[in-house]
Image 1 (cartoon, rainbow, N blue to C red):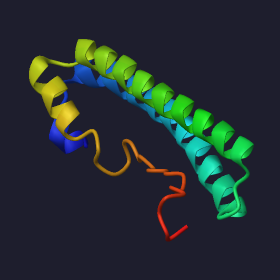
Image 2: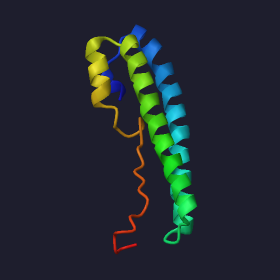
Image 3: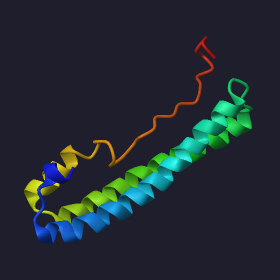
Image 4: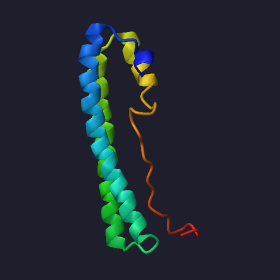
Length: 114
């Protein structure tokens, strides 16, 4: 990612601490998603309705927090970087090591597979 950004010394001093903080917070939220996946795997296919509803609420809340955190950090990164680097930063955001998004889907009872 460093090569894609080509930060000036000033930009790097502002960006990298922000990046590390963002990564730590997003990793923590990602751990919550993994926990939900593991919980779901432990009870699938017989997920009690109340538990499925709670898991869906937890999942939705985590996804909202992830989106909010990303927006918050992108805004701050944009202030720390030149316009060219802020644009490049957005284009490399999904590269390995930045954000790992785990897709999680509760089973659809209408799907015969479940």
